Length: 223
Image (cartoon, rainbow, N blue to C red; front, side):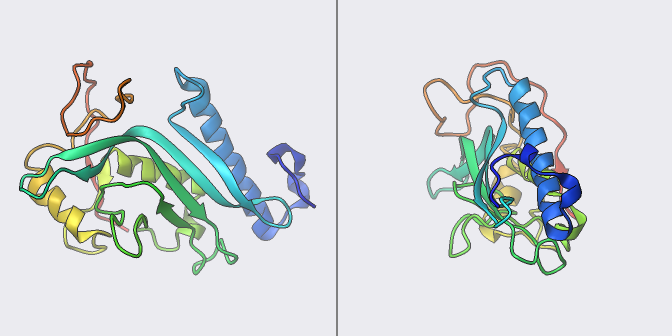
């Protein structure tokens, strides 16, 4: 039986994995609906999702998450110090394996667009892989909470760049954060700034729009 909407399901008839999948879907949908309602442009909410794959019951097993916020997507040139480049639309896939949720069935978070963050792989065969540094995250954390955690990554409100456990996902980006980003204050930027009408800014230079107070930075150091 295939169902297209959350409300087509009777929660009382679901159990085990299907009950968890429905609950995760409902929470994520509610979160994105609230963001859409609060957005100045409902067609461009700060957070939205697409269901990319469903199981035989019609429950999502793969999502695509769209974040609309200012974040670092790379750096300019090869000469130190390298200024950050910013982007405003970031797409991430979430794949829920067949054994999700379990200690060995963690969800797989992978960015499909470039993100320059020490806890996200920037290049190589595992490009885009997100390290959430939570043991058994499929058991201990909901998808909604993890999606919000990644949003804090994008805004550099949370990161782990020190070469200590649990170790950065991308050592090159971590080195840039420690030796260039932090000393030049480039990781502190107006995260809520909307995309400029003329497109994405190429360098880490703010526009003349009013700057809001930057939220305190949180360095991620725990698992």
